[in-house]
Length: 253
Image 1 (cartoon, rainbow, N blue to C red):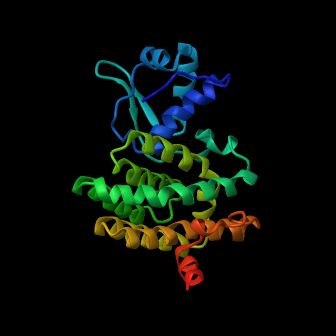
Image 2 (cartoon, rainbow, N blue to C red; image 1 turned 60 degrees about the vertical axis):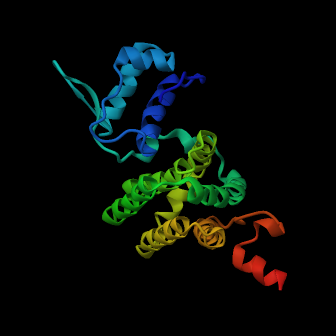
Image 3 (cartoon, rainbow, N blue to C red; image 1 turned 180 degrees about the horizontal axis):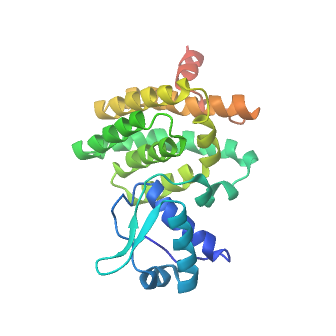
C-alpha cells in the first residue's frame, strides 16, 4: 500500500501517502497501520520522519495512537483534511482544463468496462457510497472523499489494475476542480448525488449507449461549474469524438 518516497519532501509525502489511502477508501476506520519501523522500511525514510508524520496525522484526527499491549496506530476517521493531500500543489490551475479533457477520453470507457466486468458486490459498494454521500450532506471534506471513492470504485469494478492506477492519478489531479464543485450552493451536492445514482443505474444496465449518456451528464457537471467559477474554458477546441453526447447527436443530423 505504501511505496518508497522519491522526493526530497519526505515528511510531506509520508503524510500524503497515508492520507491518500484513507481518501481512496483503501484504509477504513479501525484499520491498523504498520508499525513505525515497517512504515519507514516501506517508504525508505527515517523513523523520526515517520514519527513526525504520525504526529501530524494524529493531530488532524485521521489516526489515533493506542499505547500498551494490543496498541499501535489505527485509522480514526475517513475524513481527510484537504491540506494533508499534496495533490493540489502538483497541478496548476491552468492545467485543470487538460485534466478535464483527459477525463473525457478515459472515464466513459472505464464505466463501460465496469458494466462488463463489475459484480453485484461492486455495485453494492457503489450504492453504499451514494448512501453515505447523502448522509454526509453539509460535511464538505467527507463529501469530497466519498466522491473520490465513488469514481475509483467504478475503476475497481473493471478488474484491471492499470485502469485503477490511471483513474487514481486522474482523480488526484482533479482535486482543484472537484473541491470547487462541492463548495457551490446547497443544491449542487444534491444534484451530484442524483447524477451518481443515474450513473450507477446506467452501469448496472450494461447498455453502452445509456452509459455514454449518463457519463456525459456526469462529466459535464464538473466541467460546467469549473468554467463558471474559474472563468476558464472547460476544454480546448473540442474534436467531434469529445463533444458532449447530446451535441454530437445533433451535429450528426
